[in-house]
Length: 329
Image (cartoon, rainbow, N blue to C red):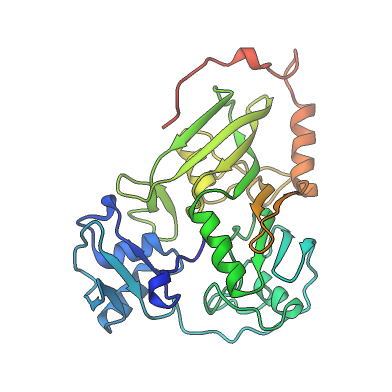
């Protein structure tokens, strides 16, 4: 999820309360809209006058109205000292404005309390000294991938590139396509999952489809069918935390290997079978259309190979075998 900044507030994180935020507590909405802030952190900052609604400090329990501007003055956590580290990176593209990286599974994108080292940000700082934007603990990070999701992401090297790339994300013009292997045989050849996502009402470290969550849209199409599993290509229209994993669980087809939303272990992978395979955007300076593709990692390929060997007699089901169904919700 990208760090949301209010251009009218000097780059401080902020947002406008949406219709589905109306009547909700301030601390709850901050945690939903700015995932880098926990609810407890939002409440802590609000209690010290560091969360503003329409420019005025408000307490955590205040109920928001749609359209109100919210601005957070304090950091998501106590500032961390981020040290450059010479961690190898698989760089797909680099120029004076940006860096496109094929992130391996197991590499955390940005530091966090208790985990200040060994992240993508540490590696990028060693390669690009003086990197800025994106917040104190995630400089240059335009969008993020979960630790155990592999694949492509773009890093901005300067403030202007960061602003223009995040603007493209907000306008939904950045193409982000993922390969994902799910449990079960998906019926439709393609579909749209349009279901709002917010914090799980009982488990705050998880996300869930909830009635008053933020709008979230994922498009999918089937790439290959197996016995008891399906390879999908998913395209994000929005970028909510854990969006693909939550949406596919909601569809009834959790991601194989996902320890949080699916609990579907597979011998080839100790992580979710999710790979950011394609990334397209407009260069923030030249206006050139850039497109990148990255093949999945060896463990993903090994799982595919085993599923292909295990196909039931008669081979994969062809496109005509699925019952057509309307838009998935």
